[in-house]
Image (cartoon, rainbow, N blue to C red; front, top):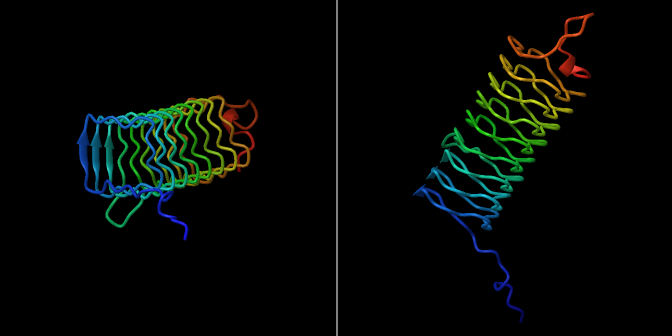
Length: 204
């Protein structure tokens, strides 16, 4: 009889953990569970945290460069996750569920949020030049003062989003839904004919 337990991936549960100044670089946390945890000044660079369930957890000014968060669910009945002030440079959140989470002043240059649920997220002063949001759900998201230079929003839904004061230069909004978006004081160029932001060419 074959022993199937030898190759079974051990479960990782950091629920309730409180870790400060920790270092977990290039770790395999695939399928991690971490509810009501608190991470402060922790480094997760290069780690795999895909397919996880992380709810009501605080990532306070953490370093998370090139982390794999694909298909991770950051929502729970206990509350939202907070990433305020953290860095997620080149991390991949594709197909993740971040609905309602707080990502204020997060540095997310060249990160991937393709098909990610960001509905209702607080992303004030989000710093994400060259990031990808293809097919993402950004309904009602607060992106006031965000730096979105060169971002790809192709096919994304930004209905009712707040983009007041956001930098939208050189963005791609082909096929994006933009109903009810607040563009007040957004520094984008306008066309001579209809005064619509040229960066929004192709948007609906």
